[in-house]
Image (cartoon, rainbow, N blue to C red; front, top):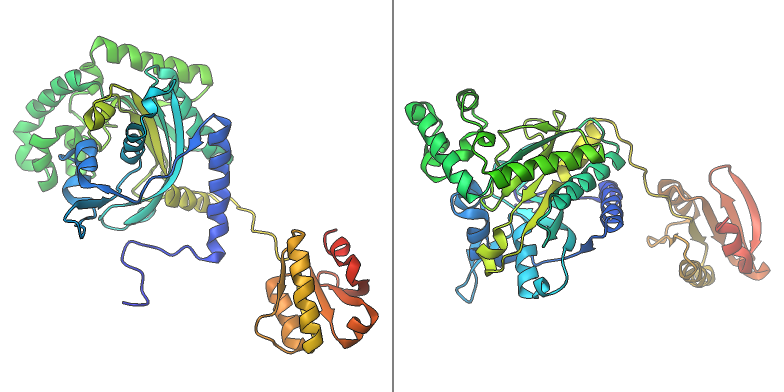
Length: 417
């Protein structure tokens, strides 16, 4: 147990971390290009934040949260998603008093106790964006555009964008009653989870993964037929905005989202190339969340994008992520005096911005040259007693197996070319 990571968690080792750096930089660059600023929130929050925001009828709150009592007898939960924490920070720091909108992005670790599967772990990571204060569907279209452009820049162009409206609390209540009327004669045929959802959250039956429940749901009423005039107008405006941006989409009334705070817009970018869990990015509007948490009437819209799923998809479709550049040089030393000189030169070259190593294992010359091969360095800089006496190093170009004498004072000029 001591040498095994807990189930549902995964180490990101040096031979893989460059892939994370690659997509992190792309996401950061495009988010800032769109005018978003980064926010970082604590990994845990008061449990009530999630029961109030995510909703106590959701699977996340009912079954999946990592909740514990701390030494002060407070109920604490590791965050299962990123939006609630961003909203809490927005309210706590009274950002609503500033001119709006507020546009935020983040990369965050989230925690849910569920069965680990391809692209989904118990500790997983998300990119997310949130726009607070904008009621216009321009904000919804902007974050969809941001997600679409980011995924394309990652080399993914065969995703499907699916959109829906989940209405507002008024029209959604009518829709829930219609769903109950539809599913009530089939209640005995539903899976145990959906039997429980029938009273608590019947909309979640629509996206159940059980084959029998999926078949039953095919004939269920569509929420689009129960939208009030305002929600209908907003959905039409969203479609017009996406058309103007040239973003293809498919209307999918089965997108109902798993979190209670969503209103109006709901969307997903989906693929069939990462197994059963095909959603790479999902999001939507949550105009009532601010009031539910802090009694501030501020609209919001955002999305979350799973990093593990993204990298899995990129691997499955053959996207090649550039490997990091090798070290510029290994300083190879022979003897005590050479070691002292090697330390001095290594430090000087690093201060000037070169990636330089010196063998910490104190191998012999043959072992150090083998180490240079393993590292894939461009140059091996050999320093011994004769080199110190002559004031120059023997620099071996490891790619073409050529060697030359270079004065110590000219090493940076030579290695940086």
